[in-house]
Image (cartoon, rainbow, N blue to C red):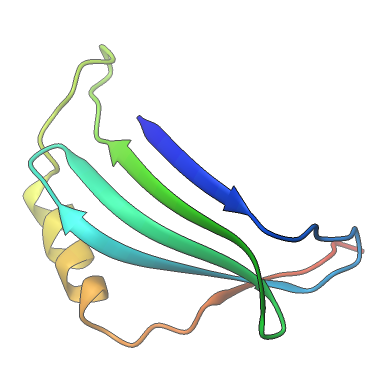
Length: 88
């Protein structure tokens, strides 16, 4: 739906990056996410995203209750950032 990105420094092909995603808001049919991309302790990019849940017809749909429960639990848990590495 919407992305705002602040690119601060470039990443290189063989860099090992960490991507942290934090749920900022859970709406009826959309999520607002804050994402940080780092190499070691260096912030490379900061993103503010709004994503929407849509049906097969492409129209907005409410977030399914089961998914809402999982997202709400993830919002309050301590989840380590994912690691993105070069594929051999």
